[in-house]
Image (cartoon, rainbow, N blue to C red; front, side):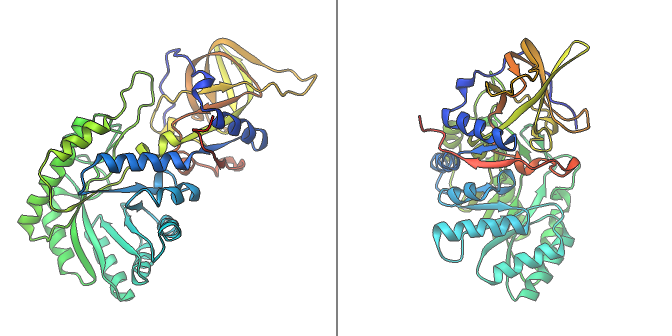
Length: 420
């Protein structure tokens, strides 16, 4: 891990950039355990509906549960998405429960991904499928196909599957690239013919198409539309060449959100228009966004436990660092924050502060990597104030490392951020 890149003394956000209900919830939350997440599930659901409306009728929107698996968030999204993309039995069961609660019946559509699915995971998925759950598995190796086949046969069911492809080239870039590079994800393009033949020969599997999730965090809508159309062309060509009855093409997620001032937002209208202008592919095209739907619907709040000066540097030490919120360090994101003043302070106790200074935000862990932001210029920050990081509704709580040192985990709460 690397510390987040320097903000080069860019200013912190004004507190009024944080919605009033979120500010109130953050202060209340920090007065208890000291740190945690504030989510607006209705906002996440509205963003999912906006995405669905912008896309052509042939598109299906699945929410990537790895981004945010909080039950209240899933419950709201169950009414707004076509399904969920999951990577574990816990995620699959939570998603099915949310779909059952909001829709009734056996539940909705579930896709299952992951580069190394265990026999136990596949057996659990096959058992859910045998009980009526609508589950499809993205296969990432020939061995995994054999394991999925054995699980399906043992459960007396048939598993719909796609073959995940690691294409030789990917005509798009993003903050994270998984296609066209060495990695554990998917099957290299040159090995796809043999993989397709193996899957088609195995009992208990119904090969429905291909999965190509090659990029994350892309904010170039035109490039991403071209990437999606390229995926469809590739899948159609491969299906024709290898005799696959193509019904599904899963193009992954990858829609980015801006983290820094000056970053352009993803042009959703232009993205949808570019896809709508293309011929109807005649198949179901699955999108699996997590960050685009969830990130703007969450905030991370942490109380400042101390303010320190050391050899020309100023540090605001917060109650929860990468044990609660690891994303800025793992992805080197310049994730800015707002300072919420809290005048509550025990009488007679020193209250260190920094004014008009560039501050590095560090956590309470015994490692120099526990840094959330570097060199952010603040008007004032004191021990006891609360820092709030927006765009924390995806890959926040789920992506952290809560067991290190055994501090209490982050708490989670919900609000309607659009109330006055």
